[in-house]
Image (cartoon, rainbow, N blue to C red; front, side, top):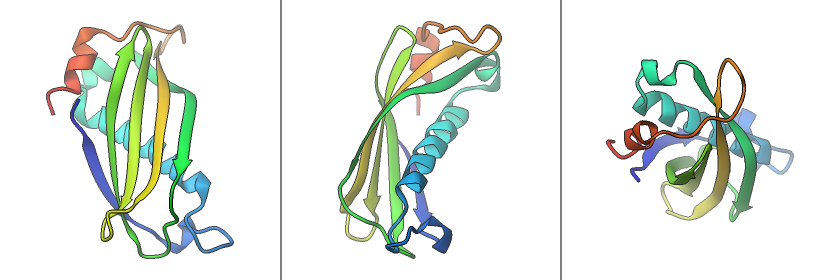
Length: 131
């Protein structure tokens, strides 16, 4: 699968009481890059009528980021089966290349009208291969 990459710079509002990036902010960034990846690669007509929801997050925090650090985020789909897709997000300090956070998230595809799980079609899988 192809990766989607985004770079961000740590701002004051991203920090916790220890002046490190707050864990909740990392989770927000994971969600943001996942949505951005989907919106970027999937045509609007494909996105209409379906939604992705998180089932589980498995997050490993390896190192802390601080104010003004530049973080390179990379995400990709590791595998898909049935209605579930496993998405990996890695965040590295862009300057040092040090791994800060790695997550594996199970996303379930739902019909937007019935809110019932729907199988991930080959067409949906293919949009992540064409990047």
